[in-house]
Length: 337
Image 1 (cartoon, rainbow, N blue to C red):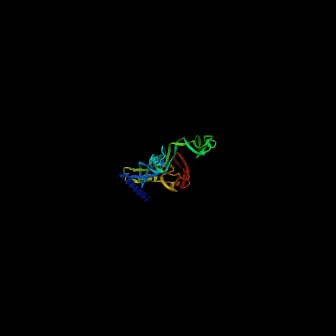
Image 2 (image 1 turned 180 degrees about the vertical axis):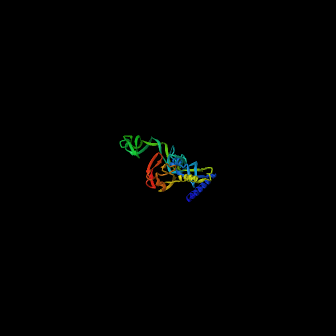
Image 3 (image 1 turned 90 degrees about the horizontal axis):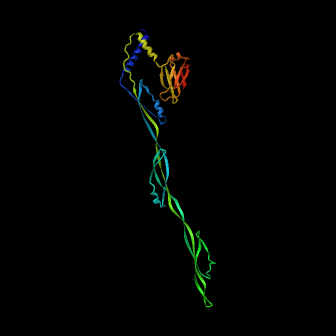
């Protein structure tokens, strides 16, 4: 047996031994992944959570997703004015008509407002005008006549007009004329009457302001905890392969399944490896439909052997329901889907 075959055989035996150990393990490992995303995209993110992941060469399958919505508190200043109708303008009595605090709700915001006593105002709410009579009197002493020629018939005083309604004369002095006693001087009292109006208040309107801070809980982020369970394959690969033909056969299988394509996605300004694939002349197709968050920018890196075998050929890319065709001219190339 040639040296080349011996080397190949050694590699195969090592690989088979590795696979035997890997497949035979029975301890189930649980893996948890925590994701915190904006609440607005939570539903979309939930649909994009990976159903399977590979870590440290172990494959895990999604078993459960716990979702918790996280809230934040919004605040705003609020003021409102309360009013009461009362029959008194006594401030002490009026303020007692209002509660010291007031529960308030506005557009989902809630809180307790506090009465601001300094803002209390009382003004007339309802009233009417009422007329009433007022009186005035003037005296005139030792006037020579009891005629009203020199007596004012109306007097305006302090904004009110008074009208003479009852003149009263008394004889103050007499004189004998032809044996007759004749009045020569009089004392007079003039009675005047006027009309005034007054406002009768039937009710007052009292107002006071309440102020405070209102709060509202709104969704902020969503926490997803995805629980994955290790995928197990049971049974051993036969430890012994007899003959050169068997060695070559299994070597062909392993070499055939070697990954010869790397797929990178542009994230945060740099390309990150997202998957490895195996392509050959009969299979020039890559599915770029994402199962988790990815941008539209990809970089494809081919192995040297694959590039030599498919140079100049067309490779087909699938992205959801769209397909792109790219002609292979370089080992590395970028594509936007």
